[in-house]
Image (cartoon, rainbow, N blue to C red; front, side):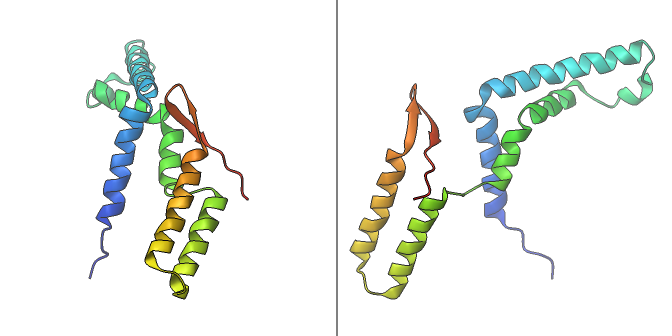
Amino acid sequence: MGTKIDLDYWTSLVRNSINTLTLANPVKTAFGSLFGMVIFVLVHFSAKIELLPEKSLEIIEWWYFVILGIFIINIKNFYYQINNRDEFPLGIQRSFSAIEKMENSGNFTKKEIKSMYQGVYQNIVKRINVKDDKATSIKTSNR
């Protein structure tokens, strides 16, 4: 039997990548497109002055360079999306772990557990720094 493909992971990764390019960083994406076009012009110019063989460039379309430029400009964001997804600051992780332990102990009602989770969510919302109607960061004190 072959390995099972985790479609949830891959669709989430693609969705986050598209959000990174279009919603979160439209300026970086525009600069990446521009950077790709500059690379395209430089490569084709160097082929014209015979630094590169022109025959090898016939199969490379201009939009390959645009994609390369976008990827280069956004590589830090892609790296963060892949490696740091679903991570909360340590204090929030500890809060969730403590609530899960309390829930598993069976000493609390579902309503009490729900109330505890709501308290954590409210603290997370309070800790978000808002500047010019954009969430810029979460205060990460590890208390």
